[in-house]
Image (tube, rainbow, N blue to C red; front, side):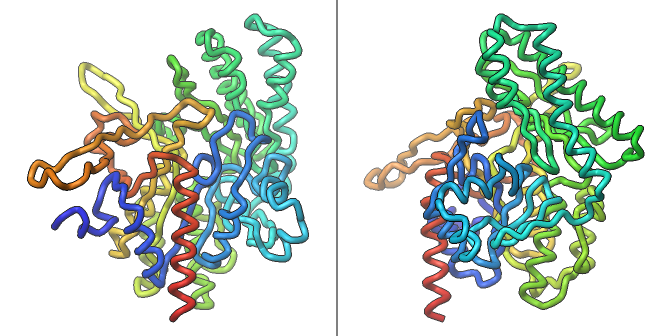
Length: 438
């Protein structure tokens, strides 16, 4: 079977965006689950400077009921995506009345929103929210103390400005974002790595404090990017090396708030909109769910009707694979905040034979330098020299020696979020027109 006739879910690193448009417009049961930063928005060091394309927001409406976001960021707050949407459209009433907020899950899966901006935090207790409210202040205090002991040659005004940009006071996922300090300390790798280590110690201490308040199993720490998980199931922080900033985001999150479980919540809502019933119950939330992939798959197999199962298209930009040599043997640490949910979508597709597609957006040209760019080459057909040159992706975002990575990225966008937005608008219009004629 030639590449052009191979279904997208059987391809790897394909540039056939038109075929993906065809799939989206022709497949009746379609479900798009999409990450945000680096996918439909440029990756930036300061989240307050993020912008979003107005025509992209309009296009999401054409997918109504078939499109949901899944992000570790948040919908609400001054750094939330809703504020970006409101700034873009310059009219909060218009956004609310037309339902132009991005529907889906934020905070890794604990903050649900519909397109009209109605927010809920299913499965989250008041005690947990109260503890989270205190975390940004504790982060700020720890950063002040770090730079009191290690000023790293930085002026006081620069440290103060850096701390303001670094502490993200998100409601359900307070975060340390070290992008600005990596810029300040890019020629002092030891100092920056010391700061990373200090933030890891802080996160460990916060978990201990929660434990003493009776919130032993309430929280976990998400490192972005990361090097996968250790034997205890904890994510592994990645130290900076050279131009690679390593882990920049230290997110203190609610346990259960992991993207792959969010896929189940979105599927549950999608099925309700199509069948009038919630396969997992109306109150199902990420905190009730198993975390193990096999158990997640079994939960889906046991509760979801295969006939109603949509073709799911998962879209993300953070997938890592780093080589590590142990006793002269190469092993690979596989991580990235989008890896888990993309892999689950891939496995659901295999289990239900629903042709699910994983899509990767290359965000390496953003302001955050911690991901490998896709490598492309031009090929000329040796059989027919009259054919035009063909562009192919010869290397994905992970380590090129990692030949056994279980995650296959079916379709890729090497030119990043702008290329993806143009594709998204075309796909939305094509699907809308097709459905209007039927």
